[in-house]
Image (cartoon, rainbow, N blue to C red; front, side, top):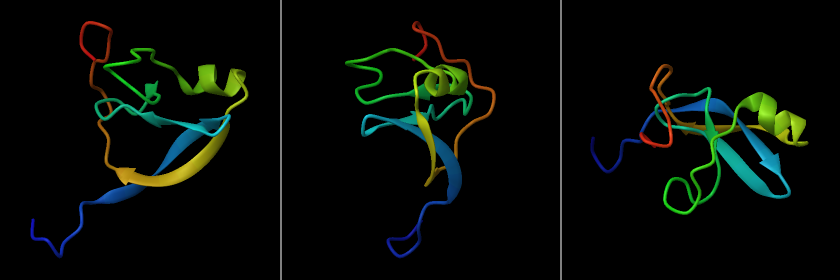
Length: 76
Protein backbone atom coordinates (compact mmCIF):
# COMPACT_ATOMS: atom_id res chain seq x y z
CA UNK A 1 0.00 0.00 0.00
CA UNK A 2 1.40 3.39 -0.92
CA UNK A 3 1.07 6.57 1.07
CA UNK A 4 -1.50 7.86 -1.42
CA UNK A 5 -3.78 4.80 -1.17
CA UNK A 6 -6.23 4.37 1.66
CA UNK A 7 -7.22 1.31 3.64
CA UNK A 8 -10.64 -0.09 2.76
CA UNK A 9 -13.40 1.16 5.04
CA UNK A 10 -17.01 0.06 5.14
CA UNK A 11 -20.08 1.55 6.77
CA UNK A 12 -20.43 -0.19 10.13
CA UNK A 13 -22.93 0.19 12.95
CA UNK A 14 -21.40 1.53 16.14
CA UNK A 15 -23.26 2.39 19.34
CA UNK A 16 -23.04 5.55 21.43
CA UNK A 17 -23.96 5.90 25.10
CA UNK A 18 -23.24 9.19 26.91
CA UNK A 19 -20.75 10.29 24.22
CA UNK A 20 -18.86 6.98 24.46
CA UNK A 21 -18.62 4.99 21.23
CA UNK A 22 -18.63 1.19 21.19
CA UNK A 23 -17.23 -0.44 18.05
CA UNK A 24 -17.25 -4.00 16.73
CA UNK A 25 -14.25 -6.10 17.68
CA UNK A 26 -11.85 -6.46 14.74
CA UNK A 27 -12.17 -10.28 14.73
CA UNK A 28 -15.95 -10.53 15.15
CA UNK A 29 -18.53 -7.91 14.16
CA UNK A 30 -21.07 -9.39 16.59
CA UNK A 31 -19.00 -8.46 19.66
CA UNK A 32 -18.63 -4.80 20.67
CA UNK A 33 -15.93 -3.18 22.78
CA UNK A 34 -15.48 0.20 24.39
CA UNK A 35 -12.59 2.52 25.16
CA UNK A 36 -9.57 0.92 26.78
CA UNK A 37 -10.16 -2.55 25.39
CA UNK A 38 -8.36 -4.90 26.06
CA UNK A 39 -5.81 -3.36 28.46
CA UNK A 40 -7.98 -1.23 30.73
CA UNK A 41 -11.39 -2.72 30.05
CA UNK A 42 -12.08 -6.30 28.92
CA UNK A 43 -15.87 -6.01 28.94
CA UNK A 44 -17.57 -7.38 25.81
CA UNK A 45 -21.06 -6.38 24.66
CA UNK A 46 -23.64 -7.54 22.15
CA UNK A 47 -25.77 -5.11 20.19
CA UNK A 48 -28.72 -6.21 22.36
CA UNK A 49 -26.74 -5.34 25.52
CA UNK A 50 -25.98 -1.88 24.20
CA UNK A 51 -29.52 -1.19 23.00
CA UNK A 52 -30.92 -2.32 26.37
CA UNK A 53 -28.56 0.15 28.04
CA UNK A 54 -29.99 2.97 25.92
CA UNK A 55 -27.35 3.17 23.19
CA UNK A 56 -28.03 4.88 19.89
CA UNK A 57 -26.89 3.10 16.71
CA UNK A 58 -24.58 5.37 14.70
CA UNK A 59 -23.15 4.39 11.31
CA UNK A 60 -19.41 5.07 10.89
CA UNK A 61 -16.85 4.12 8.28
CA UNK A 62 -14.36 1.69 9.86
CA UNK A 63 -11.78 -0.77 8.60
CA UNK A 64 -13.27 -4.13 7.73
CA UNK A 65 -13.94 -6.56 10.57
CA UNK A 66 -14.01 -10.36 10.80
CA UNK A 67 -17.24 -12.30 11.02
CA UNK A 68 -16.43 -15.45 12.98
CA UNK A 69 -13.38 -14.85 15.18
CA UNK A 70 -13.46 -16.14 18.73
CA UNK A 71 -13.30 -13.36 21.31
CA UNK A 72 -13.15 -14.25 25.01
CA UNK A 73 -11.47 -12.94 28.15
CA UNK A 74 -8.66 -15.45 27.52
CA UNK A 75 -8.44 -14.46 23.83
CA UNK A 76 -9.09 -10.71 23.70
